[in-house]
Amino acid sequence: MRPLTEEETRLFFEKLAKYIGENIKVLIDRPDGPFCFRLHKERVYYVSEEIMKKAGNISRDNLVCLGTCLGKFTKTKKFRLHITALDYMAPYAQAKMWLKPNAEQQFLYGHNVMKSGLGRISENTVKYSGVVVYSMNDIPLGFGTAAKSTTECRHTDPGTIVCFHQADIGEYIRSEDTLT
Image (cartoon, rainbow, N blue to C red):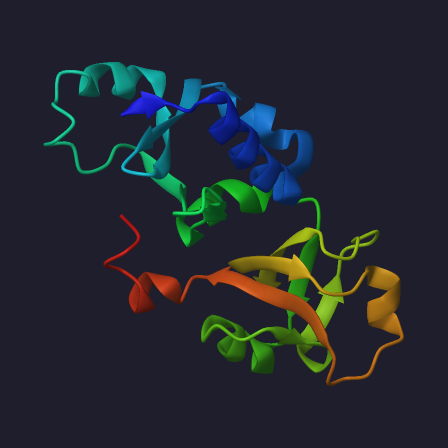
């Protein structure tokens, strides 16, 4: 487990800022102690500094994971967020979409969100910005990329895609062996 390099940090923060903007500072400087991001086996983990220091006694070969996995770097050195990051992104999301009950299941199966399934959308959502997808009961379901801005969503056909699927809570079941 090691700190991220400058390039890895830049890629990671760019991806995270797409969803939560300047609120990245809130993740690092928390009232319950400082937290940090560490890389282990191409995955970025979010862990308190206190636990990280205690884990220093464990050899890297024996360490499976530490903290919460926020995502991983692909072979082409791009960063991909995992669904395990949703609990940390949802409270600080800048753009949000709420799905109608009939569209929730389709999203949880990994499909994009159509205009007909969109319940509401936060104001000033920009096209191609990161959005956190909620149920109408304010339960975070996953995240994606806005295919249309807020104003475009109001004037589009019901069959138009308004959000590209990135990750959903159904991945806990579909991909449980690759999340750690």
